[in-house]
Length: 628
Image (cartoon, rainbow, N blue to C red; front, side, top):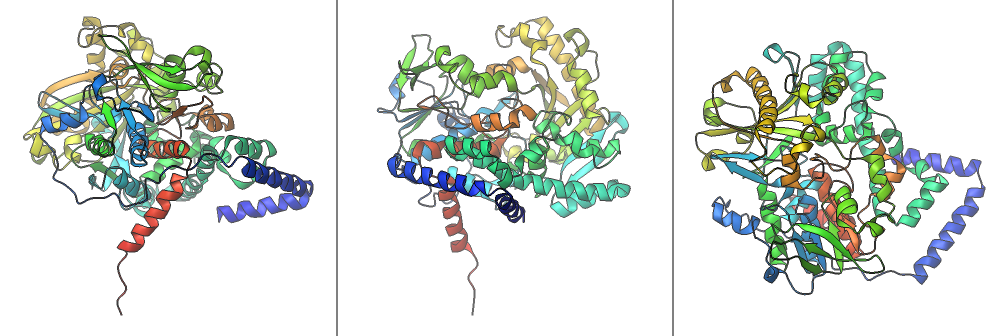
């Protein structure tokens, strides 16, 4: 219906402005001539030419066997010869691009600065307790397009388990007697449940549901701007034709807060409808409504968790890369992207105590984030010529965060923890609560009440957790934080940053733990292990310059026409491409598609179409056969 309306508007505009007919003919003629004169490079091989799913193998739980895949230490002798592509960073966006390029016959090397591959997909074990770090729950992992894509990327080896029907809970107010609201799986149940909580607001809730659906569909217009040629995007935007055909800017230019203010005066309802803002790190008065709509829609069919933990994602993708002639090497910190005298990216430099190693390839893909890529890795005389460089200061980094990891005595059978998450807010005004907290100086932070806690129980989500860690449970509690609270300890040695640092982070962590115990009394007195990770920790492990959570900020400045069209996989620096959270959006599913679009650009073929055709073929083959 939205497409039909857009077409009708387009023809009304043409009738009112007949000069557009001549402009259109001129554009068509120009495009035709350019196509004839410059047919472009020959497309690469199709990585979706065959169904890559294999019969599922037994879950690998042996630590040494897993380390043999996830922790392959960098050595020059391990570098494949005649490299086509080097990928900087082994997050899901980098691994996705690497899988597709390796399957298309490109010699691919992935370099990771940490001692374990996977980026935010990695997990770790301390004192016998296993914790995830970035993948806490994912939507759309039933038989959806995203699940089908991940099946192809992992050879069909990754299984997902649904979380509780109440996949999220919102708790507002004093944690000892908080008002609690459950978010239920399934679109109808989700919104019916909201109406049950707020029966007098049924009209507002129904209108909100309609807006979510419309804005979610409008996002296709943003994808178009990422995949069409730059010159064509420029023409469409400059002439105004784009806004006639696509409505996405209608929902990028209005905030979530403005939308909710137009629907209701009920502050509790506004908070419940906004609760998930921690998943993109922007408050309701700053986030474009379209981003919020995408996330709400993402969980309409519930939430899922990878069986075996999030490190399974990287484990299976790496196996695919290596079976196709590539390598994924860790402890390989890239300190610079090498460029020739024409400003073309031609390789990378890896820092080693025994001497730096320069590695060359035809294409360089950065999964290190736009800020790292343009302000740290590229030669500055090259970076400053890029249209992306000035955009970085306009948009800025996303918010940072602090994570409290708690190991608890007791099994899931004993503690009966939910696999759903809890979002705790100290009051029903998210903008005020979080804004006031993040404006505090460091000396006041330790005594100030923590206004937001995201509480997750990885041990309750993964049905295989108890097999690996019997009698133990893990708790993850996250809140937002400022980089400059901890910046002075940036250069301290890991686990030796001093008493003041430990006191600050532990005092915040203890507050978070007390909130958790008020909400889940069965945990009181069960703590056996606690560690608190700060923005400085995030920088050390994930390589993000200010410990940021989601790459570039996800506020309105990220969704201007300028930002959308410049933050693309194909940068304006020859030989350099980007993947990860700074291409489309933050979040796991987004970076899968960022990796796919990045590989499309390198291979000069439309992998979205290739994947769609493969998916249609598989669905037809697997559809139940009609009987006579």
